[in-house]
Length: 208
Image (cartoon, rainbow, N blue to C red; front, side):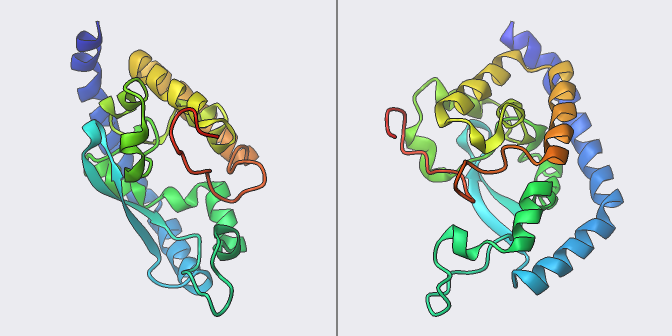
C-alpha cells in the first residue's frame, strides 16, 4: 500500500510544490523585499539565516530563513536566545514571515510545502528507528505536528505525528494541514514552548 501511495502521490505533490513555491516567490516578492530591509535594519546583516538540516533520507541541505536574532555579542550581553531575539524577530516568527526564503528550498526539491519540519543535524543519531521514519519524506514548511501545537507539544508527540503523516500522507491531508496552518498563524498559537523563545533541545527519547 505504501509503495502504491508513493508512486501516485509523490509526483503530484511535487508538481504542487513547484507551482506553489514559484507562484509564492513571485507574488510575495514585495513582501520578501520589505522584510529583508526590515531585518537588515533591526537584526543586522546578513539578513538570511542559513543552516545545514537533514532532508529526505537524512541527506543534508542548507535551509534558508530570515534572521530573527542578533549575533552573539558578549560585550552587549547578547548571549542567550532570549537576549538575542528582537521584537521584530518575534513578529517574524509569529507570522511565519521568517519562513519565506524556505520557498527556495521547496523549489529546489529539498523541502515540500507540507511535511515534518527539518530539525538539527545533531539530532540524527538521537532518534529511535521509529522516529527516524520522519525522514522518509521531504521536510515541510508546515506539517501535522505543527497544526497540533507547533513547538508547544513534546518532542515524542511531535515525532509520533510526523510518522503518522508519513503513513497517512495524501493530497487531502495536505490540504487540511494547510488550512489549519493558516488559522494557527493568524491566532499565533504554539509559536514557542511556554517560557522560552526557542524550541527546547531534543536530547533523545527518555531524556527530560
